[in-house]
Image (tube, rainbow, N blue to C red; front, top):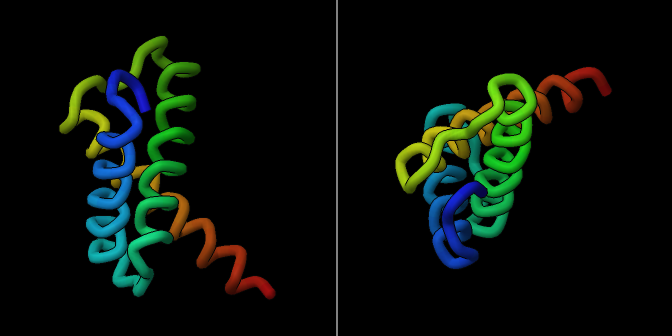
Length: 84
């Protein structure tokens, strides 16, 4: 995540994973919420930097990025899982 430390990354990732879990009506544990939030933020930040040259900074910018990225990951997992 851009501009935050490791502890804040874990906090934002957990919060973002929990919000994404509620939005997508999924049921995950704390570890998976943190993992989804952090991975979602990393993937979406990389995409934003490649497309626009910058990413959202600060707590709320990273939280929004992480929630959207986690929702995309949950959606992608469901799409792949549904095929098999």
